[in-house]
Length: 338
Ligand code: PMP
Image (cartoon, rainbow, N blue to C red; front, side, top):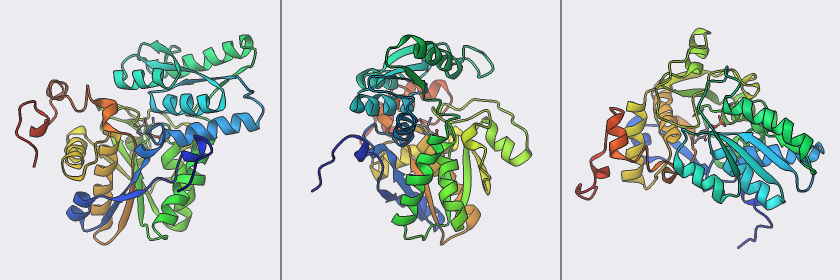
């Protein structure tokens, strides 16, 4: 038994779990890194911790200071929890289209929420750009100062994964890992893990949700987005500072109609009830396994829990309205799942 001294020391060192169905279907070993087991229940706790530590080390964040961020949810939850544990206040700007579960969780984590209409990055009222202005304004008025976490372009985000996620994967597999694949929100996870593992010969792949711009960028050189995926937190439309170093070896475009059956099978048969980006990631790992051939070991990320999306992803009416497959066991009154 060990006793954690604080919340920060509980972040990371998550287990790798062998994904039985994906491995059996491909003849590969497909492993999921269980990031939903972090204290804030997502991959973003790592970035939140590194961003806060970096700001403290630079003297930008002083005791009682305010952390401001524009976030689709998980980064905000991480910033609010880590912030609360260290005596900082968190103000989170979020598009009002995000799931109610994530908004509720942000409030529970102690964040003050500022909801804005969803708008593309080109619009000055886009949530990320709005949060930058708000941070600049609060830095003038708050007695203990304020910082903009700026996860998209703050390289402390990528550094978290270069220093923790990537080396953990290497150590946990004893170096017997051939490929790593995941989707991109800020790019911190993919680019940071690539920094740690690509020089060791591990192939790096992007799994992009349908209609997102990066698959088009890495395969044709053109950033072209069409949108359309119901997944949240992923699907980036620009080359963020965190992505600048990334040179993926492979790229896969994963439609929701491919990711969701994988996600539902994980819940029904492996006890893993996860958010939509994990479905894109595991579907991406299956594609990478088929591209590399049997006998390889591929690692991906299980980003956050399905409970964060009960009203959408796991709601038959929502799925039907989006012409997406509804697993029989999700329908009320359906026979018990087998
Ligand atoms: N999955 C979920 C559920 C997320 O919230 C995020 C971050 N927005 C990601 C994946 C992508 O992670 P990253 O920002 O490191 O690219």
